[in-house]
Image 1 (cartoon, rainbow, N blue to C red):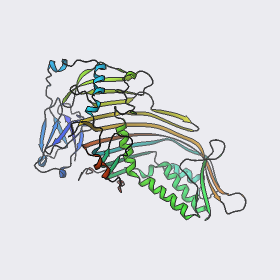
Image 2: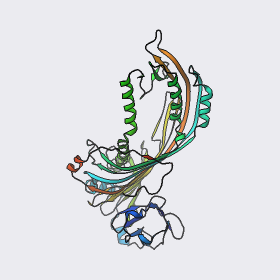
Image 3: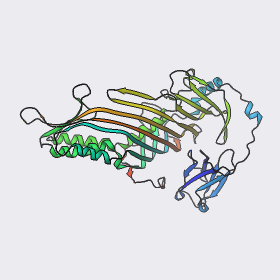
Image 4: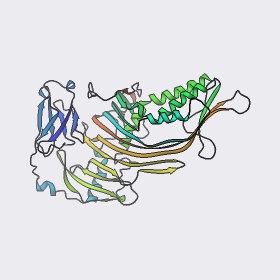
Length: 460
């Protein structure tokens, strides 16, 4: 069941509240104050506790709890002046102490991480024009193209969720591993514009294809023919060639586990102490202007809060939350203040205009901090304006090999936004031998659902 935590007076959501149970497991509510409770995972006599600094702690017996709203009552916060003033440091001094304590504070050895990964995206087609259309294949004509474009969805929403055990170390030379427990996805099947067009045209084209012919897709952006990257000539008379091509397609679609590893790795590569992290506020402090530190409240703890703003060509600004006891950064909020990526070349443009989010680090059983929650909001706008040719060729005929040809110009502009979240429920240190004995083999691919249900975490 989905539950939301709200303020009892204002009715506003209380984000990032702490939820923990009698068995010492717990989670954090999202930015809307919501979380999912799976009663079947808990014992009938278990208790659930909700806490947030500034609010009275609430506790419930799982067996008696059936509400979808939890209202927390505000309580006054009394802070000692001694606590606020006994470590009055400058931003430079705090940053220096953060750097000094990185190795002591953060786990960089082999770990097993119990994770939930979620990605929700929305893509909208702003412009899709096909003109200068010519075809020697009767089944593929202008009326077919017009009908196809008229019936294609202009917007596509999709979602992907994965539960897994993720194994890693911060040594870049060692491949990360994953054991996927379950995964599910949802998307608008009618909204896959390019795939729909390609499938329709390919089916009609193959109906006209001679038994001993093959075909190519070309784009003449240099005044000649250029084979598009990732597309190959396939001889339809060579069964071994077809088999290899089909195996390649299957591998690309089914290699889901490696894709999930790449997505998770991207979060960890954003951690501020990684050498190549774009959030290099701490490792390259000379490139940033830091605000004077303020005392703030995060969860149940007092923290230093500082803002970082790039001096020159830096693309990200950030807000740092630092534990005053051990000088560990426990949270970073970041956002891009310049386009992350912007290119326009030879009829193609890509503009990544948004990448912002937050990263929360928590202590686990080994008393070192590790990533517990991360979120990245992503936005890009891209376009494609090029001539396209689909050419049937035959090497067993006299004269020129070209038999049929379809040519047109495609002018496409789309916008894509996504929210990717990672939650780490548990993290434990493991030995190198344990890591080596883990088989990096997965047979799980996402189950398709028309819409997500709320029992995804059951049995996990």
